[in-house]
Length: 323
Image (tube, one colour):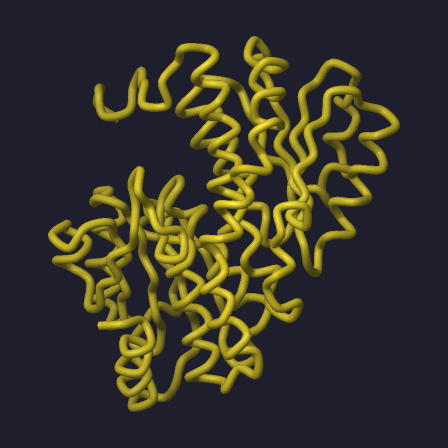
């Protein structure tokens, strides 16, 4: 089923029992970061229902009391992370509509979800069909079908522009990636700053790409929260990456940049505007920040991996020991 058909079918069931009251987004690690854009969209734009995002294990162990047949649960795992599969099962037991996003049609996610969305992944990934893009599609369809969202047509048109923006962005970032890799290959600690819809990019670069794949210490930091304690650790030697988003929270990132330009020397700034994101309609562009930026920042870390001769596939613990 296409996403629009899934939501149409789900709406029929939910309307029959009293209407939609909440949407939950549930996943772990990079998958949680990928579906954050869907949560951000609904949390900002929905007027008649709420949205939350959960780590899968926390969802299992601290299950929200309102989870029931009037809820939609969007869950994501490339293969079948055990706790995410269990979260699918729990959601169905509670009567909720489950949409299982997964990388392949035969995973345990696909077998257990009421509805299944198989997304593009791997080296030949089509970014307009990625987990992030599909989380947004689900969000826009929910808004459209449950609330007659006025920006729907602009949003759907935006998906036709994603692949070209990412392709151009990768070319634009080549010099920055080379300079970053050479400059920071021996550093051990990084701050990665962003706000609003771009925060999931900071999360992904920190947790997945720098910490998991390069064994570097990295802190994802909210640009607004930076001034409420963390900025006291800023000095001339600390490597800082700042993602400047386009949209509602851009002023938070610009405020941080003004401070960094005065008190920090080793700052890498990546601005969504410079990647060409503004070919997307201004009314919806902010929701596409991380869809565009995560492939770009991964290229930067991948370049560092090449120079360090430390493969992005190298692990010490993951999939190797009991945890």
